[in-house]
Amino acid sequence: MTEFVLVAGMFTGAHVWEETAAHLVSAGAGVHTVNLAGLDGRPGDAVGLETHIEDVLAVIDSVGAGPGADGGIVLVAHGYGTYPVLGAADRRAERIGRIVCVDTGPGQDGVPALANVPDPALREELVARAGAEGAGGDLDPPARDAWQRWGSTAGIPEAALDRLTGLASPQPLGTLLQPLRLTGAVGALPVTGVLCDANGSSIAMVQQRVDFGDPALVPLAGPLVSFFDLPTGHWPMLSLPAELADVLLRAAAGEGHHLVPPGSAEPPTHLRPFVLDVPQLPSERHGNVDLCLPDADGPRPAVVFVHGGPVPAGVEPTPRDWPLLQGYARYAASEGAVGVTLDHRLHDMAGYPRAAADVAAAVELVRADPRVDPDRIALWFFSGGGLLAAHWLREPPAWLRCLAASYPVLVPLPAWGPVDARFRPEEAVAGAGTLPLVITRVGREMPGIAATVEEFLTAATKYGADAEVIDVPNGRHTFDALDRTEESREAVRRAMRSVLGHLTG
Image (tube, rainbow, N blue to C red; front, side, top):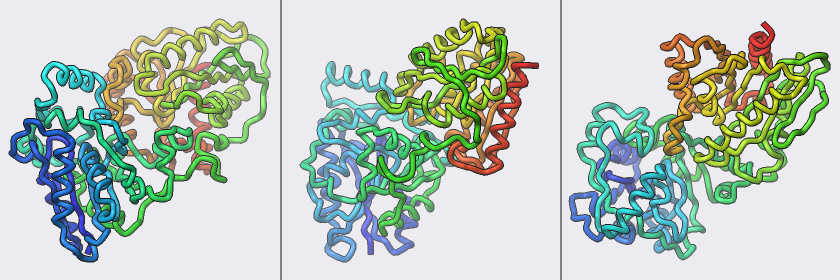
């Protein structure tokens, strides 16, 4: 019998696990929930991370000897709970068979849980409060309509959200400010991550960061680490309790998806070839901007392709040299337009203002080129670059003849934390007027991203925007590199025909 120890996240207690625990018990597992000090009715004064580590240790030590307890306890943590779980597992590594982290990143030695708070302004506020009041205070739990600040509430039934709010407790500040201290013993234990993609995280997104060589995430491609995706928000124990129980049982059995380490035989997604075979045409480099030139006389319309992200600084090759973007630029040039790729500085979630300035500067460079008709420009955004469309939607200039977006993010995802309020296309579309919009939507999209597209299209309809949707029913995110099917090729052709038609019509 596998023994599970379940540890809840911020503001919550053992009650959030009730349905998932019932499913585990019915499957024959042993289940033990941890009541963390300050979150279970006990006073929270002077409670720190170390207190919560001791709470988890007490439960581990209470699990009697047996097949599941003899080195095989599965520690399950949600959100903040990862920190006391890692601290306890480091001290009882011989008792632990696996750690499961539900919709949270791994903690690191010397780093407090505050680092995982998604809102940078809130992080600064808490540090300032601790400096003024000490670490003995509390952080008030969210109001019913404010849980979204801490993670997506997608899928939580209304009654469950009411109960979550009614039973929520203040979080002792010391638990967020005290650094996690590890000896390294926990590093030898198997770990499974359960990613909730409606909250903005998925196996594909983590794999992409590993492919980019992100030093913080490359270790996740090791043999001891596995992953599962769940199509829900940040609280799967409330929104998909049976499905979460199934994932926990599978994780305990050693199942799960393993990431591909950098340098494997198969190229990563961003280096796979464009779905269409397009001719090689002359290209010129101007700073961070490349122009792919058509074999045509006179000033020509231009299509500026804006890559997604975030892409860590220092990634080589840079996005403008990725086969996908080069393929789109050459395709546009083969049809008589100037194809433009550029590198912009969307390296993290704070980078949208920098990236927007880079895109605006690139557009001005392109419009100033004598081979370009400055009054016939289209902008085409991809993936996380979709938020950059907001500037051009809000007050479209007369020379902008079309705005396109492929598998875009059009509302900031919850796991990203706050993004500058200027970058909300679903609000900016109110000003789009008659600007033609061409949205390529994939049927196998990550639920969190798909929801942003639907929210945008609802707003576009409300404000009477001219939006054409090109559906790729079997397409995945980055289908134009991943899915080499006729459906994919035709979707790209349709989108390009539409964009060029608005430039030349």
